[in-house]
Amino acid sequence: KKIDKEKHRIAVLDDDKNIVQSLSSLLEGDRYTIKEFYSIDELDDAIEQTPFDAYILDWIVDNKTVFNTIKKIRSGNKHAMVMVLTGQLSGAVDSEISRAINELDIIGPYEKPIKSFVIKSNVDKFFPNK
Image (cartoon, rainbow, N blue to C red; front, side, top):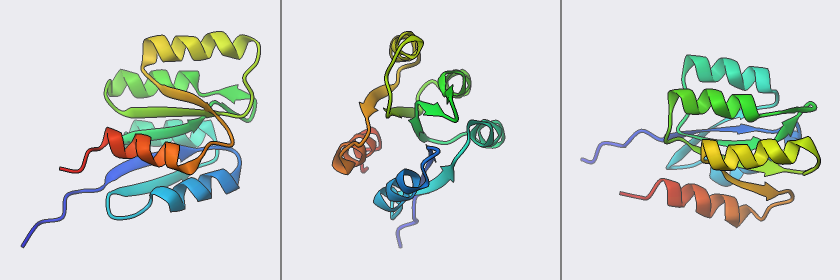
C-alpha cells in the first residue's frame, strides 16, 4: 500500500476574498493544501510559525507591498515558490518589484485578472509529480 506523500502547503494572500477563494478552489486537492490570508500581518505571523512550500501573493495589500514579507520568506527558505500578482503597477512600487525579481527570485509579477491555468501550470511545474 502506497503511503500518501504530504501535500505541498501553499499560502494565498490577497485583500480581495473572491480572488483568494477562486485560487483556493483552483489548487486545493490531492497535491496541495491551501491556507488563505487577507492581510500581510496575518501571513507574516504564520510564516514565523510554519513556513509554506509556496506563496501566491498580491503585491499590494491594504496599501502596503509584500516586499518585506518576501524578504522574510527568503531569509528562511531560498527555494519556496513565490508568485506575485498585481492589480496596479505604478511609481515607486516598480523599483521594489524589480528588486524582488532580481534579488528575491519571484515568479511574476502577473497582472490581474490572470488566467487560472497560468497559475496552476506554474505551481505544477514547481512541484513536479514524482
